[in-house]
Length: 466
Ligand code: GUN
Ligand code: ZN
Image 1 (cartoon, helix red, strand yellow):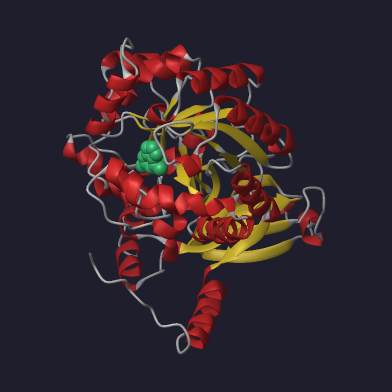
Image 2 (image 1 turned 90 degrees about the vertical axis):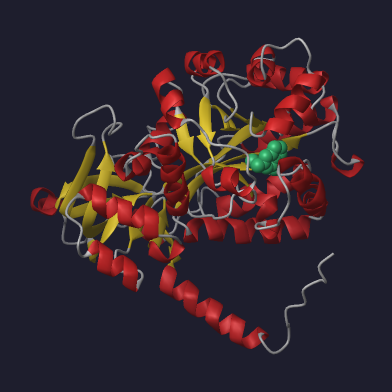
């Protein structure tokens, strides 16, 4: 659908009567930051929130022409925001390797090669966007591949669903296979062209995407810094200090820098709307610099466990004032679900003796991420005038979740049960700009019908283990 096309139902006023959760601030820093209405109503019109709050206070705004949807046995929360994910790695999620660098060589680069084919890119981008929505994620900060067309494919799929999406073509001009290389000049030109085409077109936003320091020459990082200065409101995304071997390699490639993060700093790539994945092997000076420049640390716990990269020190980053957000990092990450990401983030924090509450994690995945990305006037809450991106969580999604949630004594316990036991099964519906873009049970039925019709014709053929 084009960005300007309007559906009839875009303009219709709809009221969703449900349990409602939204945030006024960071629950770790402000009292009453989490606002929960057990009998609440969310009123949406023309793709935006009109009002959200107690049903008793807002029922007067439910005009006779308002369509009322009864979700009283469900919980509505703002759509999740995933701040670091690779769409081209969808087909290689759960590929085994002994750590980051061999995983990149063995699986990632050969898979990303396929995105020179626009049809393959479009097919993957469509599947990827549907998988995000099925997981309750309405906004993501997405890595494409080095191919310009891979970014076109992702934005096209996202625009068709009217999702607020941030993405960029990867910049990579060394230390990777020849077939995945651009140059400092072509990377600059392609990125500038994509910014022109997609940044602020409807709900689409662009991110400059140098993959990580080892795969860019100094000339390429310099060119990226120039683009960043020319476009002060575009996003920047990269990886930093994920893995011990990577950190050693970076020190060899860039002698003379105080730290890995300092390389990005040198090229003007730390600032508001700059987001760095992992941030595990940082020191106090690095954290201070991230806080000073308002640069975001994107914590990717399922990936860090899977690749054995290390443990993000949430408490130290938080104390230093670094803006923190959560992310899946699929396909290094092992799940599209931000609920499963919270589950693992809680455990990472536990290992260092820090208690990361579920209420804080829901904030981190919604309003906190929106604030970190400087998008808090648009997404992440149910505040009036916000873009109506929201999800309907089902406390009875599985027998175990139902049993546990029926016994909870507080909001924290309810959210903790969703985070620890939930996944895409708990996402009953997802709405983007007021339109329903995912319905769990319909999707299950469609999948079951397709699976039974293909079961006889396409048996799974595993390759022999080497
Ligand atoms: N570092 C450079 N590229 C990647 C990637 O694709 N995934 C992860 N997890 N780390 C990286
Ligand atoms: Zn990554």
